Image 1 (tube, rainbow, N blue to C red):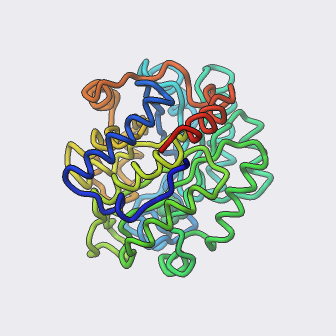
Image 2 (cartoon, rainbow, N blue to C red):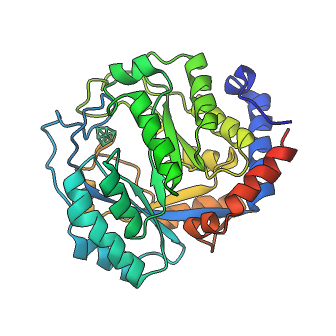
Length: 342
Ligand code: SF4
């Protein structure tokens, strides 16, 4: 019988929460074994035409030095200096079509030619032509988060465009052959527990192959800077719920978990069923003003990532995420594991 999100699981605490997370970790192990995908992220532009209330890179934040990365510098890092455990790279930026054309597309061509890295992008909603250019250049995974399943709150928080538009882009990308990963924020101001469950349910209705849950972190230079942070326990419970819903999904342990719960949040994400971790390879000069939340970000380097994986008795995957998807094993895993999940 297929699992459906339950309020009892969202609110689980103490022994009940430990059992929930163990079930989620077992569901992940049943599908993926001990392997965890390790993806590098490079942030290539902090220009953004959007104005999301929960993000420090919003266009009304004039305290940032805006910059785009240099193709050669990023290519040099990824081709010659990436850690050995990295199998994929996610190229990420604010919503900045100029960076897509001038940095991301050329970089993808270079990486496709020079490396066997799996190529993911997280660039916001773009036009069909740019999506096609990215795909032609070798990217196969598109990360596009829906942020919240509440249409009214989506507008209130000034998330990009409208929720229906965002969902249309997710469905359209999937129809074009992209492997799409989505995501939402847990604990946005005004969000109820029912809203959180609705987020999980919406994720399950979309044609995606993965979903992230990020705890809300009140960002510097944002209208929500003095709001209360999201509850890390609810965030972890949402991750476990997603894992039980979709044992074959790729679910990241986001680095914001460590901001929300210093030092241990990330490992607890792995314990709640996450199977993707991220090593940040953005050059330091660009990192400083790439502030989704705060300047003092918790940067996961390869050593921290490896320590977290091994401490949880897991192992870095030698197969790239892109290759895993290409083989179609994701779909098989989803079907097989969903049939046996309880
Ligand atoms: S969340 Fe994304 S789209 Fe919104 S302001 Fe930040 S970078 Fe821009």
